[in-house]
Amino acid sequence: MLFSAAYREGAPLQRLWNRKDTELLSSDYAIAEAERHLDAAQQRRLVDLLRTVRIVPNAPPANLPEVRSLRVKDVPILAAAIAARATHLITGDRRDFGAHFGKRLGGVLIVPPRDYFAHALRKSSRSRR
Image (cartoon, rainbow, N blue to C red; front, top):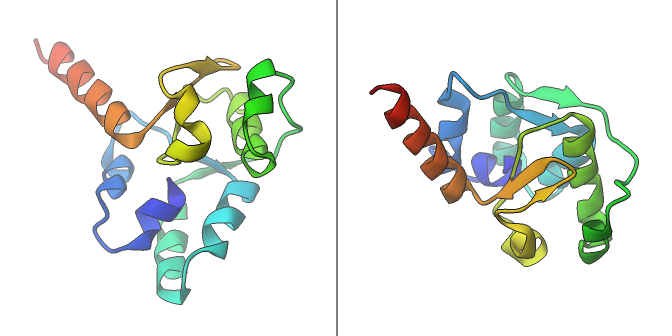
């Protein structure tokens, strides 16, 4: 999510930062992963985005059977989300997390951005009634 939001100015994922009912979390590990793949201008956008993100501690790997299907580089992302008691892990990484989309791992719902926004839109339209 961080990489995609910082990749280009006005990226659709930047809408997450405008949601009043959403607290964004990340870990140092996830931030380092994003930085590694961004150029200097994109890294400056990332720094701006991170100003309103709560940085949670890196966590030891989660002891879940489903984690075995993740690549080693993705386990710390999920472990930090579980340890922080996040409600959602929003990721566009279909290759590594796609088999888990729509499922809860360690209490965290794994969703692509599109599904998260669709759920948030339905929730807000219900609350306006």
